[in-house]
Length: 452
Image (tube, rainbow, N blue to C red):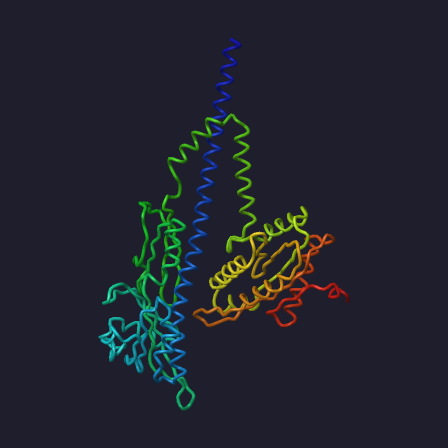
């Protein structure tokens, strides 16, 4: 009887352990799937920003063409200048100028002779409705994608040219147009998404005056169709990008193996604790990463720098605070999506400018923190900081205009008498001094700045 009771207790305990283990494992799997989808959403958002940026980089060519025509007061523009300034972009197939909406110049001419003399506002032009819209608008009007006689597809970006008359009033002079190869103009983003990140994708365009979307480009190797999507706009066009992992949101056979393995070892406390520890570490790592840029956030950067300082891993180090000048104007004038793109690009520039042993973190907004540890002298820092300052100074172009951003930088140096908080306060004061002194500059903290 005692033996039977012992067996019963063992069976009940084992059954309870198996049930609890199975439920716990299912919970972990559910969390992993949710996390995977969160990561996929982040990938989707980044790729939307990348595709939109590739469009805008190429669309900017039509603004440059208008500037050339405007500078020539609507007259002849040297083809060599056009070749050097615009046609060097491999995604630009051709450009044209249509004074009073009639095409008189097209570069390169070879293969495009038939378009000379075409009135872009006449029904003879298949896209005359878009041409009319461009003539009436101050913004770029996109058309496409459409099939080319020479083969392939393209988008056209049209922009009205307005030149001052004798009364200095802007008067419609004609249209400039740039033809961009498609999907070449977004191939860098889509190739990365499909070949490197291993996502199938569908890019769709919304039809005019309709809620219906049609597919214009895709990359698919799997049978999965449970896509997640994000809508975005470029000029007058609305697009939708949808993605799904090529391996699906989860590996069914892999999940079954994990469940079986977890059940078999459910009574082994060490393995259970191992799973708990791994999950905890993953959450900690995620909590220390900036979701937008992929670098450390404030908590992650503080932890990493404190680890170096407290363990005395290096004798010296440069503690740097940096923020972007005129970043608010980017958000206000060009939109928050462009602002996010600027932050992503800034983080990438900084990451590529420092060593693997250096620490880079985004504190929030447009403020960044760096720590560059070193053993010997600090001579290399002057060149490195100036290199960063120069790279930060750039024009941000959007459909609403151009905003010039730069950086204000504050620097202090570590010694054994300073902790993280002291370094932070000193670098922050130096950063404030850079701002007060006119921005776009580097200030080294000096103790005398605390006096008075």
